[in-house]
Image 1 (cartoon, chains in turn green, orange):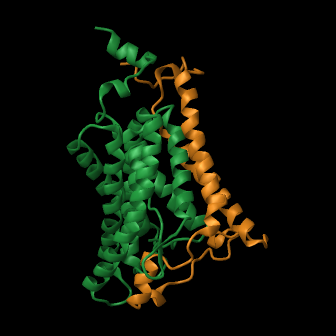
Image 2: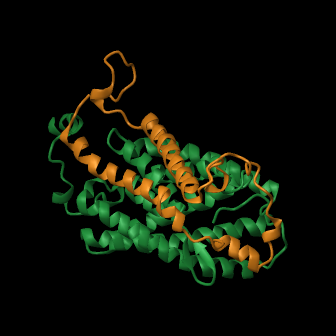
Image 3: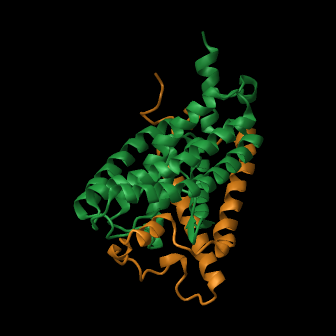
Length: 237
Length: 117
């Protein structure tokens, strides 16, 4: 869904760029609370994994391809603010190093693919997971459903940008219908990759999955080796 | 430094992501579909694809996920993918390490900041 230069006019691109800068500032503050000694390396690797997965365009209907966006996946694994930063990093590397995604469209791309997928998909995942029975094997299902829906939602936000600043005058409803239609199919791929990846990590290390916090029976998440910080804060009366 | 057994056990998951990323970007990416993606397909169908402007960095050494100077298509794309994985890892991991919460035992004795209250 990488928007190239020229699709969206300059004022709209600039406004999106301003939103992206403010959003990154917000994420840098929020991510501080999500990251510690142990999760920081995971954040880097999740970003690298999303970059790699985004190279893999899979075929969808009628001569069209799609690839992972990764916002929901990254948010579930390392937290929403860190996840949005991870996808933002991927988009910056793609635009600056690989000429993938326009430089003037960076703001639009960051807002749609990094912010919208996370801001919509992560709360949706938590809601689904909260409503489901608290079972470890159901969390990947909630992750997959949230991932699926996040893709057409992101495509609708692109249509929103297009309706404001599209350089070609078009019927917004026909573009919206076409975008949501094809991105529902791409969302299936997003769901499969997200579900399988979350399942793989949650099987071996449920405690490393940020989005699983507070959703699994305590025994599975209990710290077996108390760290000095927990001993200091929780141990003293 | 605290060589806790927990951080040691994390290495399995971390290595899993690293190996998967390198394999996907370095090897599997060669088999990715070359068809237009969802947005490009809609742009073609709805006839706004022609409004696309060339990318300012189209002449850069890794533009289009191909490594300039490497003739073999498979190796050129794979190398570009591996470089992308490495750069993304360093940038995202570096930012994460810079902004992370410091554990109490990590703060230097002379440091003024810290959650000592």
